[in-house]
Length: 116
Image (cartoon, rainbow, N blue to C red; front, side, top):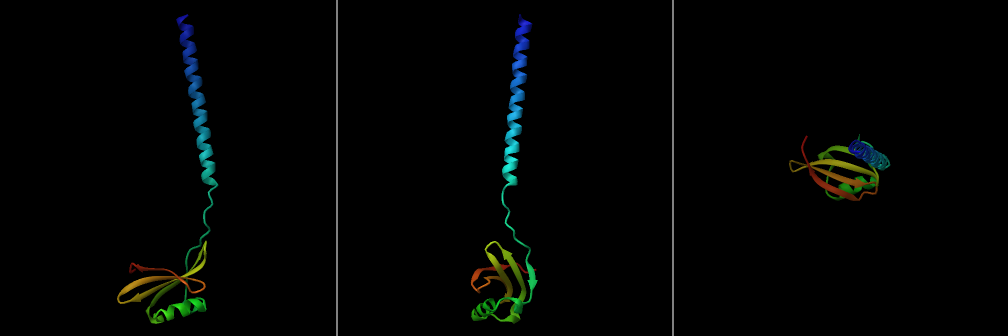
C-alpha cells in the first residue's frame, strides 16, 4: 500500500511539473508573438547633401537667424516618421551646433554637437 501511495504521489508530481512546463512554454511563445508584432518605425539613415539642396524655406530660415553658409560643416537629409527633416551642423564661435529644420523651414531642434 505504501508503494502504491508513493507511486501515486510521484505520478501526481510529475504530471504537475509537466503541466507547469507546458504553461510556461505557452506563456513564452505568447510573449514572443507580442514582441514580433511591435511595429518598428521606418526611419532611414541620414543622407549627406549640400546646403543648396535643402528646401528654399530651410535656407531662408537659416539665413534669417543670422547664420551664413561659410560656417556650415555638414548637412543631412533625414526621413523621419514626422516627415523629412534637415540637420545642418554649423561651426559658430568655435563650437559646433546641430540645427534641425522641418521641410517648411521651422527649427525643430538646436543643440551643441560634439566636434568630430
